[in-house]
Every structure is written in C-alpha cells, then in structure tokens.
Image 1: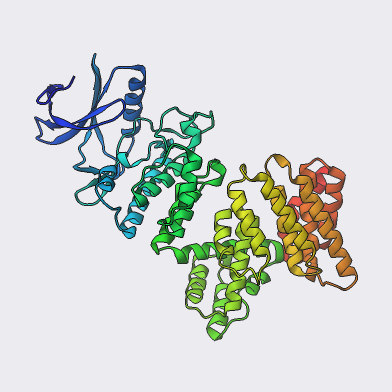
Image 2: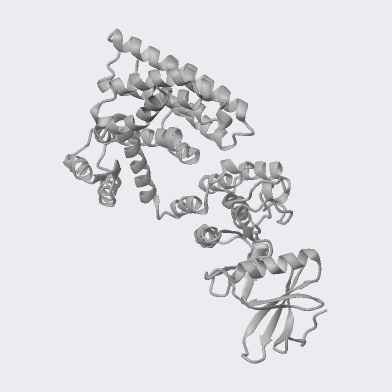
Length: 511
C-alpha cells in the first residue's frame, strides 16, 4: 500500500491521494530532483489491471495534444503498475457540476467544441484511437478555465471488437453490452451526446437506455437545438448517429453562431452538383432565379463564372454567400432554395439530419410533401426500431405523389422515392424501386405523348431510364438493363453527356 511520504523509484515523493477509480488510485507526487509535481497512478496486480496499464501507456505515449497529459515515466514491481504523468491542477467536471448550477450555455458550447476537437484528434491519429470512456469524471478543468481529458485505461483502436469496459449510461450499447460489433468513431459520438446532456443538466445519464432517451426527449430544460444534437449522437443503432466528430463539430459551430454561412454554402454546392448532374448547368440559375434587384442578377452572373467540375469554386461560394446573406433575394426564391437543398440532402446525400433541418424551415401548406419527408427523416434516423413505420410512410408518400397529376414535382418525387427504396439495406427495396421507376416512366411517356406535360430535353425520361438500367444491372436482370440503357442513351441530351459513361459500360458489357 502506498503511504504519504513514501519515495517511489528513488525520485517521486508521495504527497497525498488525489483520486481513485474502480481499479486504480492516483497520487500527487513531488519530483525530488526537479521539484516538479506529477500525478502517479497506481494499479494493483491482476490480469485486468495489467491490460489497463499497458494499454494506457501505449496510447498516451503517442499523443501530442494540449488536451491530454503526457506520460513521463512508467514501471512495474511486484505490487503493481505505476504511471507518472502531468499533474493537472484543477477539479473534475463532475465536482464542478455537483457543487452548483451548470455553466452558461456559451461556455458549455466552447467546452463541447474543445472536447470534440480532442476526440477528433484521436480518431484521426495513425492508427486511429477510440477514447471509449467520455464522462464527467474524466474531464478536468484547470484554474485557467482550460480542459484536460484524463484516464486512457480503456482507450482502444478503431475496429477493435466490443469491450466489457465502459461507464453505464455513457458507453454506447455496442461497447457496454459487448455485442461483438466493431467499434468505431460513432461509439465515442454516443458517449459525447450523453456527456453533453450531463454537462447541460448536471445529471449523470442512466444505465437504462430507453428511460434515458425518453428523459432527454421530454426534458424541457434542453433548448431544441441542443436536444437535436444530443439525439443525433445517441441513436441505439450506430447508423443513426453522426458519422464522425467533424460532422458533429459542424453542428456545434452552428450552435455557437460561427458557421451558419459556411454550412449554407456547403448545401448550395451539393445542390449545384445534383442539378448539373441531372438537369444540366442551366438548372443552377433556376435555383436563384427571380431576383429582387440588380444586385442579385450580378450575383448570378458572377457566381456562374466560378464553376469547376460541376462545383462552385471557393470564390464562387464567397460571392453567393455574400449576396444571400445580404437578403437581396425575394422570399419565394429563398423558399425554393431551401426546398431544393432539403431534397438534395434527403434523396442524394442521404444525410437525414440535415434534410430534416431544412424541411422544418418550410411551410407544409406550400410544400405538402415536406411533411412526409420530415417523418421519413425521423424514422430513417432510428430505422431499425421503426422500419415498418418507415415503409408504411414511404408507401403513403407514393400514394400522395400519384395524385399530383402530370406535374414536374410528381416526377421529381418519383425519382426520390425510388432512391429511398433502393437505399434500404440488403437490397430489400430494389424491386420496389424498379416498380416505382417503371410506373413513373410509363406515366411520363403517356403525359408527353398526349401533350399533357412537356419533358424539356427529355431530362426526366433520361433519368428514369438511366436509373432503371443501373438497378436492373445490379439485380442481374441483364436484358432489361440493356434495354433501359439503350433507351437512356437515345434521349440523354448534350448537357448531360457525363451520364453516358456508366450506361455504356453496362450496355457494352452485357450486350
């Protein structure tokens, strides 16, 4: 047993115990040669503590980041394992929050960003590291207000199998319950969401997931944007969480108020790619049509001079950003812009959180399909739990869409619904996607043949046929793939020449 005044390794004089965990004790020690204070962690001998000690040493010696203490010495004797690291003169967030009300929201957001940057650093290390134990007790606040993350005992490499280690309430299900799944960045994202909740409310998350999830959903103290981010972290299924800390940090930056403009421009770039790929470069001008004044017209002209490989260059984005933020476009144009961005995130990028955010800005009386899309977004985020509801909602959306008549929105929605069926796991929606496309194509050809709808440059017919060609090829239906491929090649216009390459490969490879 370590005693006050004891000198370890002839150098480190123990002053007092300053912390304790399930398998370790931490002591404040003075270096009798340097006069410097260190933290000494002691773990008694056992199979588990041997693994923990070796793992912590292996992880921490690789780190070079201001948020993490340095290891300066380590050894083993017959009694156990010793790790000497920087002494952090401060208190844990657990202590801070238990002694009073949580800090101001602005400070909390800054802390969240600091922690997220540190975890991103670990994830982007080579090889990548998972922290796996984010909680109030493992974050210290120094006297100068800066934060430090401590305790790397259970940190591990990405792709390690599920571990029995972790803290109830904070640890993701795939980690805490040892489900044998591969752990990845999203495992730390889950704990980060629970940490946000604990830091905002001062309450530690409960072990029972369903209970805690409902508590967060119904906690009126949480502002809606904070609740949305937390829920985006803590989906039981990894697929429903933010994919990486960088994606989560974008949301935190927007919450802080510093990146709204950048995020909006990313959406505009994505929209430009979608419209150019499907409808040609002229479609970009449609999105920002109907300007209020000459300034908006100049923006359109200037921005369209800065397009490279289907995307706006940095200069083009800067121009558009300045004009849009200036409010020189009329409300109708801004609404159509928001609608197209929502569709892009929903159907093409399949970023359902971002899609939901944009759809929520729309008036459902003007865009009735937004209601279906918002529900599909919410269900997609928790897909495994609400799969039947998702499919039922998708079927209802299809029924609503068929009643729209011969209208451009009808055909745009057809393509989007087919995309959503095709995105179902294990190919279970592929046949439904083909049926959706074939029905839409038949209806479109009837409408154009009867003069009920003008499919300019056959843009929709080409897209129906192109997607049918690709889907049929993926399912091994070669004759149909070739048929639809040839029909697509016959109607694809000059502005969409880039779409021909994949179709030619299918047609020539299966002919």
